[in-house]
Image (cartoon, rainbow, N blue to C red):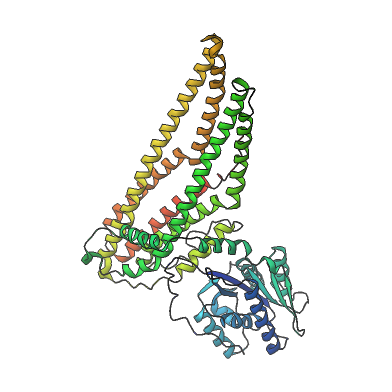
Length: 539
């Protein structure tokens, strides 16, 4: 008989530097009976230890374990017990059937009580997708486990599955999805490893890059003080003092500030190198034109052109190698989720498992890491218990802190992007006019032979500059962003008007949820605009 863990009594401690542990998910499939439980349990413990060796913790990024299990009798509970013996490990239960119905499948009252104890100790209990029959339910639960895990521990006797969702079928499904497997064979003293060199490799690399990035301690402290001042409205302490805002801020600010600062860092590099990319392409064209028209005997224009074209390739390769673009957008998305998390935590809205990352691309390691990071931080939030007397304080925080702050920010950004759209459009029209004028003067022979080459150079160089400006404008998406900001301001103002008249906690919590949806939609729209603007050659 396995021993279920005790229910967790405390949440994890916030990391003062905003680093986030990597939660490695271990799935399980296996037989319920028909094997020597003690011997298999020993093999399972060795398998879990092996996973720890394959995916070790580092000073910056501790690796914590999570077991994803349906808690069936036998292998499911043995693996859960082995994983939960590790410090910081937790449990995600995947129920194939509603809990009361599922309990009926267990053989004894002791087994049912053990199942109840595991569920009580779980970090979360989820229901697998609905099914038409119990057999299909077990199959879907098994597939769900495979989809959620980084590595699957399978206790399998090599025999064919006895029905839908059997061990053999789930192992084969994992193989098709290229999920690493550690295969424990009952009756044999061995654990077979399949694809274990790839356990969460890409997402773990993103986690280590995130946690390993240097954010100066002094700058981090200063930013937390600055950002903490932005979160709450400028109201007397007596108005918002009934809310535990200091505890919530202490929880989320280190994580928000790290994600925000890294997003700004990657953004600066991405935009700066993007501008250099377009400029280099234009300068290479100008160097080639200058060689043909002015400096034919000299080699330096050719050398300059080669250098500029080489710089183009270096920017593209280097930008992709360091993942500047995907890390910028994933860190920005993550930072905005943490910003919203402050207000959602104060409003005691706890059901935020994915944090808005439900639509993220599971094949993108940067997005996968951001999803994991939010989930890991969100589960450590301080418990909040609101009372009817907190209505005024909560309204003040939501309206004066979140809604008004976001309205001001998005209105300012709308004006900035509209200005730059207008300025860039005017610049392109001016450049077009200069090119047309130069071509016309060249056609008319204005200035004689002395000006012929100069006008030819202008006719070539100005369109090249215009193409560079157009490329830079396309990279920034000024007009679509301005329209997006305008729509967000309108929606937030509507919510603000409703919040000012809300008279109950439930109404304010519902409006906080509405605000979150607006911000999520805004973040996703932004994500959709910038996701396809990674570094590309422009020659």
